[in-house]
Length: 482
Image (cartoon, rainbow, N blue to C red; front, side, top):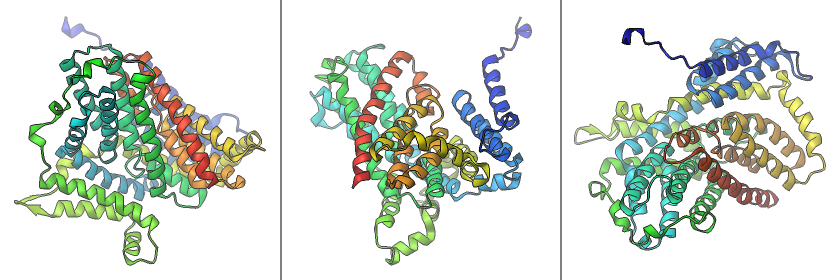
């Protein structure tokens, strides 16, 4: 009978959750690690607990619990923990950018740009070129849009193509394209450091280094590396993994166009141009002379103020009796609360991890300095990048980068390396978490796709990570030497 049906309890979920909570609150009672204070043990416990829960359980409630645990520690108070997290300009800035990016997604601008890109006539009869353009198109669109929105749209298009030309579930080409679109969309979104959790890592870099990470520098380097990766993934379908592309030989890409979205309307154009303005103005103010009036104005507003002003204008201006941006509609879809909560819990922890009174940085530096002693700058950068790449695919990308930045930057200072290059290397490498389900949210969704197998996910994402290491490490090392 239905009334006698027993509720299934997910014992593994609760076991992992309890272990993470015990780690968060109980680590402080372990014998102190030499060089770390009792306060440092509390902070480490909260950090390790968050790192584990994010990787093994979920994002939202562990982040909130992390703020509570931090507020109960000897390092802070509950009010300060909340103010350091939610009161940070980083959280405000993220929300403003998410609103504009959300408007782009909701209005269909992202879909228009993606379909326009992949439906060009010059790809007809060129299966390999189509594959490269397909991946690169979604890579570009994800820069101004959302990785998840682009990924799901790409999957829909791939399923349609499979149905039209005769591919079926399990075919190598389709599996590769489904997996590669996950990475292409993620790599595109991660190029803009002020759109997601990378912003918290930039702030951590600023705190540790005493300098400000240049957004323009980050965007340029990550765009070059991301482009190399995406093009390499497209080419690998034929030249590395020998997938069957012959079914695409007579495929007419124009069928991917949407007759309803042949042109952008005024509202869509306003979102698109606003986002372009935000990127251009943010980058321009870092390279233009500081004495220019426009630069002084933008520096006074700060990026947070510029983004907020853009949202105000979009919400205030009305055409045909309706605002360009309907705040409530966009906020429901655009603001990603998991990212907000990650930053809320990470921001206060970032300061605590690097604070002298915890002893954490001093201990880490004393451990790693002998290991890297006598090594060249090139070797140090290589070791740091590989350590971050492996770590981000085993644990939480945010947590791993937050742990490595306080170690890598002081070592870079002592060796006279380019601090910004080291910071960019750690932050962008942390974005490469795709191999295991717990590596990132994008990877977790990829493992739920029943058109690909876990073996395929690991095979093709590991290949892409190898491409990253081969392409990125020389770029970081050469720029460091310039």
